[in-house]
Image 1 (cartoon, rainbow, N blue to C red):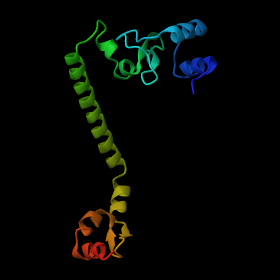
Image 2 (image 1 turned 60 degrees about the vertical axis):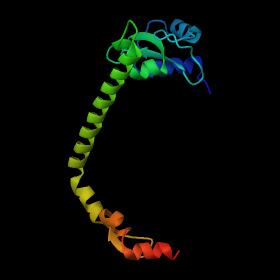
Image 3 (image 1 turned 120 degrees about the vertical axis):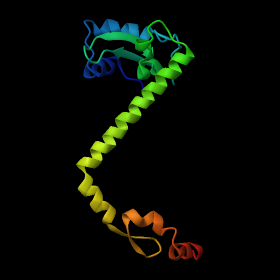
Image 4 (image 1 turned 90 degrees about the horizontal axis):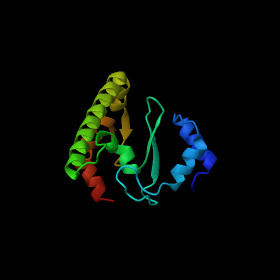
Length: 152
């Protein structure tokens, strides 16, 4: 269900957008029918986004989901080739992989004791055996577990 005008403006303010005349900006937003960067027509699946600088709060452009999510129009303000886009996305994903890796490492360091206790926790397998949580995958390859599955 589409947002009303007041809900949309409230959402912009909540996200940190700073603008003098929100009503006028809303009218421009509603009347914009294509991405102001890649000229892709807005459809139900490719909805418009009002992009702003998250540091300053200032309005930038009305863009499609793809341009907004990938910030391609900021990196390539005069347009981009498909090769530029591929290289940018590879770099973007590589950076995110590194961030996730660092987060997991940090999480593990903070919760090392808790995770260790969980791995040692005994659980009952469907075949009736009681095994450590960390050994369940290995247990499921044992003769006892295999025979249980064959007898079901």
